[in-house]
Each structure stands twice: as structure tokens, then as C-alpha cells.
Image 1: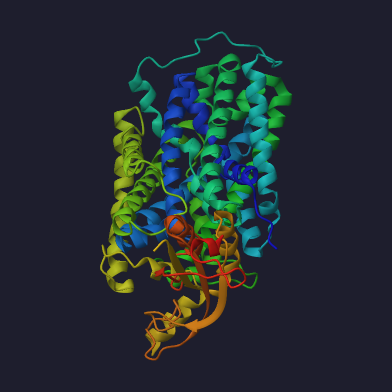
Image 2 (image 1 turned 60 degrees about the vertical axis):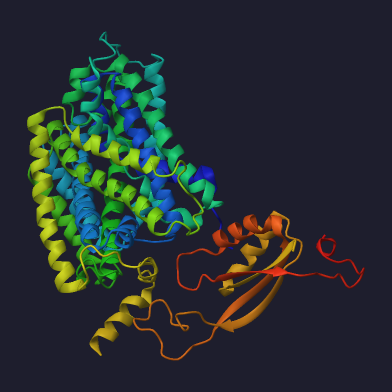
Length: 465
Length: 115
């Protein structure tokens, strides 16, 4: 019989999936700008994410065991146009950008400790090429160590946070004001950046079928994962306030290495580089692999071209691997290395993610209206209140994506432009390929049926007749 | 009447979990039979693009429990949640009033026969 995961394993998986090295970039930037005031921003962002996590748990209860996740909920909830626009296009674009940033952290981290003389972006590109080849060859060594290195990173951050918080570091303590936030406007201004720290609780959903007492443990696991991450980040910010100069922190492209060095000297920097480099490699590797699987899954339900389903001799979905790999190489080749450029890229990407979270909350309300009596093993309490607050919260975070109005407008322009291209693709795809009305939801049982491996073959054979 | 009969027709792999869940609720008896049948889809598999013209009878499980009316809502709620997958073929629940139950060994009748 298959061994089921308990609550601690569900939490561990959740925490491992949410924390990435690029989160440390946002943490350093946020703490550098607001000092300990950034803790309020993190608490707010975490709270909004918890509300969205609850909505996702309800969607999972209504449409369990789906591999495409958010896209399939939206297909059944709002129809193909919005699904392609936000969940397929937006989500994949966001994954590509976030992956590129994560990869850029690799080059920055190496160069911040060792004087290699090689540009950071070149190091990142070398890593990407190696990972593309590994994925195409079906080498899964990095995937196997994914959890171990993720936990290594988390435990290291907790340990370093506590050492810093209680002033136990060997480095010199700095004398600086703890809080730099003067008003709520300052605090809200970095909500977008703080949101990035808590992204990805939806990745817990695919493991839900192997979780014991799924009804209780999946939502609880998602919420507790977010809370644990919040506590961990608070420890680190408090530690930073004692040991790291705020200005240096906000300017650093590898804030975690800087903090490690200020806290424990050379030992701290080696500790952080060891943990974070492995974390970057395994995260980028698994993101590349899951991107190709996600594209294949979306092709299976007819939302992306069928060539994403092509496999090479080793069983890898090579079109997906090559697409994401080359895209990330292009992004890194533009010289993505300064803290400003990384933060800007993160902000551009997370707007898509926030939109997909808004749509997920809308899906909950749509299904409540359309299928009020469908059995839900988990239902978000207080009627529509929580999804509505989550929608408003996410919109508020989008509006506060950057404290500088000029940068904010530029982010909105770039995102708007990408959304326009996706809208055209979505409209054309609905009309020409899917041949379905753009805003008519596909019945839930049909979306569920699309999960069946025989579905595509049976429907293709039917079309050919 | 104080009692009702709940009949459930569902897919083959749901009985074990349903039996456990009903046991936890204090349901005192359950009868399971293997059955063949189809619903409005005429036995069409969910991945098939077109509805079958002729009915195809698929293997199913038939589960029957009799219980006092005060338990109905709770039991039905548990059955719905246990059987739910969102896929075609999750099943149907039929509830009918029961006029009497007799325990043959003791001759007890009504609710006494269920205890």
C-alpha cells in the first residue's frame, strides 16, 4: 500500500517548494529599504497569500487530483480565453522570468565570494546550458537532492536568523536605526516585493492525493508552510538589523551572502554559498522540468500547441525544456545581475502571478454560485468574504507593486504589452484551434476527463473520422 | 416513519473508504452487492468524444444502509464527500422511507431492530 504523508511532511514539502534563493533577493531589498518595518509588509503579504491558499484548497477539493492545477480550474470556471490569458500565458511567462532571476542569483552568489573574473551572467548561462542538457538526457540527480537542499537552505536561514537576532555572531554589530519605515505608505509600497517571498503554495496541491487526511492536512499544511516561512524571514530581518548595514543590503545582488559574511565572517559566506548554490541548481533544474511537464499538460487539454507533447528518446518533453532554457539564456544574456534589475524583473513577473491568484479566487466564487451543492471536502469559511478579501488584497498588491510611480508605470506598461500579445494569441487559439466560445466555461466533468491519458487520442481519432 | 433506507450506487473502488467512514458515524449495518448498470451517459466513458447510442452496462457497487432519520443528513453528507471525485460515475444516492425492520433472531421491530 502507498505510504501517505502526514501533516509534518506536507508542511515540509510546502516550505521547500515556496522558498527559493531569489526570495532572499526580495528580502534583502525590502529589509534594506524599510528595516524592521518590512516585517509589517511581510505579515500583510503572508496574510493575503494565506487567504488565497484557502481558496486553492477549496478548488482542489472540488476538482481533485488535477495536474494542470490553476488552468483547469479556470477552464471550468471562466472559460478558455481567460485561462489562456492568465493561467497559460501569464503563469508560464512568470515562471520563465522567475526562473531567470533564480539563475542570475547563481552567478551573483559565486562572484560575491570568489573573484572568478567571469561575468555573473556568463556563469548563469553556463549553468543553464548544463541544466538543459541534464534535462534532455533525463538526468534526475538534481531533482533527487531538491528537498535536501531546500531544507538545508531553510534550516541555515533559521539558524542564521537566530544567531543574528540574539547577537551571537562573530562579525561586528552595526549601529543603525532598526525601523526605516516612516509611514504606512512606505510599508505598503513594498507589498509586491514581499509577495514574492510567499509565492507558490499552490505547488502543494499536486501532492494532496498522497497526503493523509487530505481534507484537514492540505489546507492546514499550506497555511502553516506560509506561517513558518514568515517566522523564518522575520528572524533573518531581525538578525540583519544587528549585523548588516541597510544601505549595503539594499544594493547587494546576493544579500544572503552579505548577511552570512557580516554575521560569521568568511565561514558565514562559505556556508551561505554552499547552501544557496545547490539550492539554485536544484530549483532551476526542477523548474525547467516542471515547466516542460506543465506545457505538455496544457497541450493535452488543448490550450497549447501539440508539439509540447513531443518526447525525445529519454522521455523528456524536449520542446518545453528547450523553450524555457533558451528563454532564460536570453534573459540572462541581457546582463541580469544588478539588484535593481533583478528586483525589477521580479516585479514584472509577479504581477502575472497575482492576476492568476485573483482569477483563482474568482473561480471559487463562480463555483459557489454554479455548484452550490457540490460536495466539498474543504470549504473556505464565512461564505464569499475570504475570497473577496483575497481578490482586493491581490489588487492592492498589484497597485503597490513599486513605491516609485515611474517604475510602477513601466512595470504596468510591460505587463500590459505582454498581456495584449497573450490576448491576441488566446482569441486566435479559441477561434481557430479550440473552436469554442471564448467566455463559455467548459463543463467540469469534461475538464476532469481531459486528465485521462486516452482523452486526447480518442478525440483526435474522432476528428480524423 | 422514523427510519429510512439509503441506497448508493457507485464505482467499484469506493466501498472500502465508504465502509470505514460510515463505521465511524455509528452506522450499525451495511449491505454491499456487485451490480451492473449505467446512468444518463449510457455507460459512455468520460474520455469518449460521443455519447453511446446503446446502453453499456458497467460494473458498479450497490450499497444499502438503513438508519434512523435523525442520522440521515450527516450520513448523506459523509457519503457525498467520500464518493466525490468530480468525474462521471461518482454515483447516485437514493433515500426512501422505511416502514418497518424486523430482527428475525429476536423478533425486535423498528429502531430496536437496528440497535
